[in-house]
Length: 439
Image (cartoon, rainbow, N blue to C red):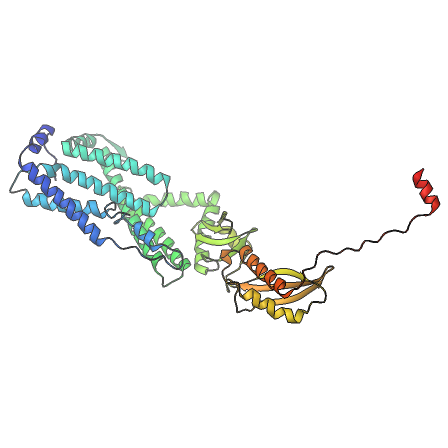
């Protein structure tokens, strides 16, 4: 595609009567692209039982957005249809509108694809949003220069600016083109990484922790391959990576060993499956449910909403209590006192039946009642029951069990004793002691 010779020629071409025909064809291309996006847009999927929302993951892809046309597929289809229409009409009518529309659609497709790839690879990143604005400005400026015919002149001027790097001549144009090629290669690798990662996380045939390690390993490998290809595209010899690798090794040995240890520990945790997403653990006095395991840290969310970011190295080198590693069932106990003289053997099955009525209490293993202490005020009973969903909290289910026990004791007329104390009065003092106290 070639830009127009001058801006006045573009204005003159747009005032011809055939420009209305081109405008109609352009609107038709946009309509067809929108209809294809509406037909191909996937329906919302139900959430994954392991906690991965597949509908949200599908919306996070690069081709379809939340409204269908805000993804990357719409501008790509519109660009392809516009190019095809321009080629078909080129030998029949003068092309004017499509000389402007094709660069605009190309710019929109480049921006949309790049932005969607970056958002899929690095969600909720402020750096991505800043890069998005910079990229948009750069692409639109290039489109304006191409449309007005100034881009070839600018490229010629940049070719004239050159210098030597390592004895080889390098021009400003080749440097910019190499950088753009490197960015394009990295975007392609990020897109492949994000696509494969989404498919792995939505696969329900294997555990979520296995999917996470496969996704992290895939992203690391693809980014490494993309970096090597990008360096080659930018004209940087791969032999120079030997010096860079030595510098990185020295950096890891001196100051980055903790960071490297966390990354290695993350892969070890996911590979061994000693800690899995969804497990309830206690680390360094903090208890909660593992909500995510990344390559550098593990995110633990407590029942009260607090979240702890634990470096993966700590999970490898320190003691970790996993309440659901081999068995998700956890025993919880509560205490109650009954008055002396209560028929405890007859009361025990009634207490067990009352605890089973609570929805979260498991029938197997069955609840147990133990006479744990002869207290000062009554008989102390320890009630033990099991739950299989510790991530939903302990205090709430203990409260429900206590209420069920209280209702049972009130219905049976069994007294919960109050603290009892015996007060003894001293005998009255003699006359001498009374006279001394009065004086």
